[in-house]
Image (tube, rainbow, N blue to C red):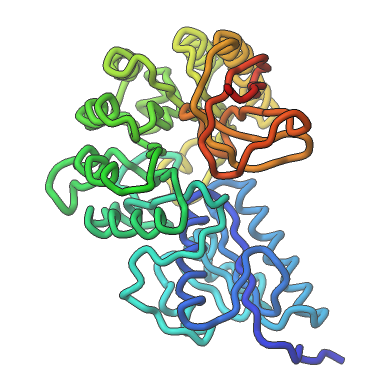
Length: 434
């Protein structure tokens, strides 16, 4: 017979998906803590909140599997309540309620006050930037906007996150100050689209002004830019990048494809010529810049010729950082009306080819770093190594700098000058400079 647990309620927040979801979970946990609730992140708790991802097929499946896992625990009596929030819940709530009815309640991406109410807590409007961070203490994500106004054919984000909505500069500076007071030294700016920042509030693209305000926050030493859109990129951002040492010479700009016919079908609003010129302008303005991009292969109608255009372009552009995804056919997107005509195995072969090519490019670029010294931040100790990053590397997705822990002692969260002694395709090996 099932019995309720007698211990005090402990809320376990489980986060799936991207950095935007990490940020949302941290806000939720901050609100719960302010309501004197006992809350943990991905640990044992008798009440579970699953923050789901609904972006592409693999992510959706992982979210569904996680929901089912906790529903089973609820049936077994080891968990009392299961709540589901986030993108999957926003996008498929009626289907989920029908298919997995044992979840106590489903909430969308903009229903934080209602979720808190279900957890016996009040939404506190005054908590600007009060978060329970889950990242290593030295860095944190700073979400500067929500939603997206772009019409990309393959993307379901506007369905789940709504229209673009920027946060005011003053609010973001206050949030950054609170993070700095907790020991955060690196801010990773995130949004569905950084390029659009400020258009709704200030009637102009205002990312540069935001950066100029954030660099004044004491304690913050690095500011990193994630998820810019190529069309309409505000070039004054590059002036700030050059002028302000705190702004990392780094830009994450997902380009998705380069063959003109595919770009047109994707509704990206650009061409191969325009994109190539934009990247050349970036490199001319900030010669030290590291550019990270992501690509999609296997989009409907992608021919072998289109793929070769993409592959040749990757070889030509020599991106410092690159990720490649196979196309996911998502209902209610514009591309869903097209035939998903590239076989799954061909999609995977193409992704593998791109990543093999990128691995070689990354290895060659890393060889050039041997003998050079870089300012690095130490994120953690793992096995026999202290693991750090240069300003040209973002957590979880980019290169790491490894220092032998049996020979050197380094502190997590500290900046240190490291000399590169060896390099692999995605790892650098280093020793501290005395």
